[in-house]
Image (cartoon, rainbow, N blue to C red):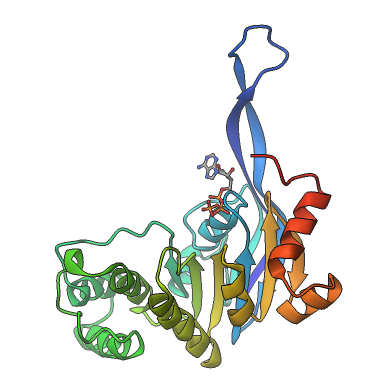
Length: 262
Ligand SMILES: Nc1ncnc2c1ncn2[C@@H]1O[C@H](COP(=O)(O)OP(=O)(O)OP(=O)(O)O)[C@@H](O)[C@H]1O
């Protein structure tokens, strides 16, 4: 279970200083990349955070993954409050970042063994977990090859496998299918569905609307740090009277006058 209340993250950025007559003068301005978000993800649920580039998806997920400290707000992961017991909370999570770098000279098996030791697992536990991962991620054919020789899809499966070694209950995946072909995407989508059906909690971000439609139990459409719509795919389509999630997003963003900025 993930519970988030009033979560905010502000950053500073340079903007043009209109009060200054010098042509290229800029000033620092604080802005909210994540603006007062509250939501829950239960066991056996896939929740999708859907939004365009710069919406704040990665910032949100990085806070949940324990990589970024929130400016304010509350996060509970499983039974643990982040503020009180961050390490225990982090062990509950398998976090896939958008820019995971793997050690090219290792094989997936060696990589998984290394990460298993970081989680202080015994040799037997690691071997058992790797056998399980090989099966669920279909990695038999490349588990002992060097990572530098793997295809993009195999590399992404290895990145996901890395998040699974300690058998977490909660998956937080940042754009797991970005840049993958349909077959590689399908294997990751099928994996998320299977894990949901086994009672795991899955929170993931994407900007592929069609993918969210087939995968998610509930969708949060995110734009400029805020949720602008939420609900199951059917609820959203019926509320906004259209069959297209894309149209819903574009209409809501344009109503807010946000479409032609950035
Ligand atoms: N460390 C940082 N310092 C300043 N601004 C940042 C930082 N990280 C992100 N931002 C800004 O916060 C906003 C949200 O960025 P974020 O990466 O969370 O969006 P996103 O929805 O994940 O986009 P994408 O799909 O392109 O990855 C953007 O305006 C980005 O420039």
